[in-house]
Image (cartoon, rainbow, N blue to C red; front, side, top):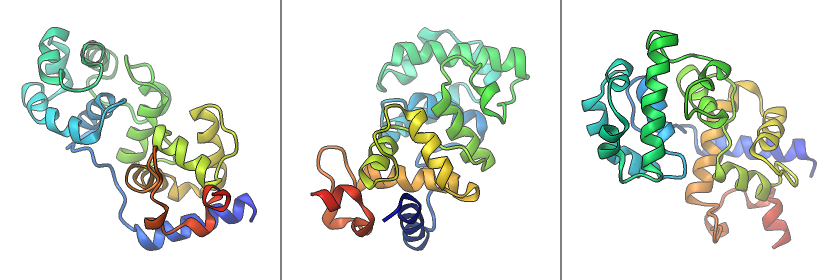
Length: 211
């Protein structure tokens, strides 16, 4: 099976079996999604969704968050991973968002990455989810699943994986394909023990072929 055939077969399966695939983070606007994605780094979406309601009630806009101190924000996010640094990044992000972008979340990767604490993965998520742009965010799930399935070969970095996926996935499917691979890695192709008995794409999977 060629790489192109593997991509085609896997994407076709997902289209048929997971027609609705979207972020599990709870948000109401680009600002809230940006904050939620920043908090989700090395943390579960479930945990993030537990802390954001109170956080957004206290700081409903970038302008409100920009006036907070990191110590104040820390009290709302202290149950997520790396709360101290995330608190600092959130305040600094909001300040720049207000000062440079008039409180409007940028709609492109380059500008988003000028915000404190916003890396390429976070920028890709925001652009794909909010504006349906063909940007592929690669987290630990997607990095692992892409290699196991055989969509990538010996990728060393998330950027290598991103480039390989974008090369073969049609642009109009990239935003949804991000969620397909992420959710597959979160619930089926898990890190410690992939649940191959529950998987619908073993016939296309390089890992399954070898094991």
